[in-house]
Structure formats: structure tokens, C-alpha cells
Amino acid sequence: MRRFITSQTGKRSKMEPNLVTDPNVLDVLKELMEREPIFHRPEFGTTRADFENMMEATFWEVGASGQCYSRKYVLDELEKRCAKPTDDAWQTRDFHCLEIAVDNYLLTYSLIQGARATRRSTIWRPTARAGKVVYHQGTVVEDR
Image (cartoon, rainbow, N blue to C red):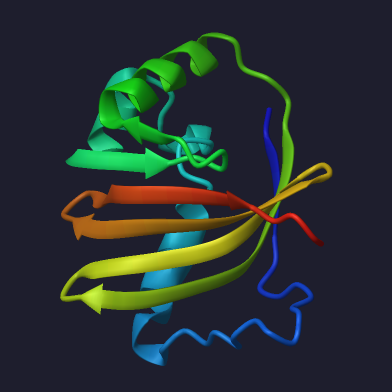
């Protein structure tokens, strides 16, 4: 069972921007906050077919290591992970949503997993059935 704690704000350094989501996309922000971190929300599915339905055919990812991952590789890894579920406690915060093109949204947030903090960026494209992930990136935060 995964446990998530979601908050809107965490501590920022003086060099970080003060990101404020446009009021016109607050409904999109709310919906996407419920779906992140992607592929870790069992209520949205746990099978390969579920994950395929969440992704655009052109999906790819840059992991926190800097390594690029194809859609197929991510699907293979998700299938393995779901075969052996673990108990993870994660915290998400500092969500921001920006419409970067008509019906394309950049969602950014921080993810805390124990002592590890990452900044996450996901490009979402809404569909008739929720949304599809186009791209995802995780970057390790070295200095917290």
C-alpha cells in the first residue's frame, strides 16, 4: 500500500520562482494532482494495459539519474513492479500547472521519498477519458 501526503507549499530558496497557477486552469491542476506521481496510483490501474492507456504512443521519460527511457522500457518496468508491490510512503508538494499549448499542460511538483527529494515535470494531454502522459522527468534535488 502506498501512502501519499499532498501539500501545496514547501520551503523554497530565494532563487526559486514563485509559481502560481493561472486561475483558469485550477480544475486541471486539481485533477492532475490526483494522478501524480504517475504510475504510482493504483486507483488508476495496475496492469500493463492500464499503463498503456495512460501514455501517448510517443511517451518517453528522463529519470532522476538522467537516463532516457522509452515507452516500452517504462511499461516493462511497471509490469515488473506491479508483480511485486511494496509499501511506499511518499509526499508530494509545490504543484504548479501551466497550459503550454492548447490542451497541453506542464505539471511540476516535488516528490519526497524518505531522504530523497526530486523535482518532477510531466506533460499531460487531456482526452475524453482523463488524460495521457506525453513526457515525464525526475531530477534529484541535491541540496535540501
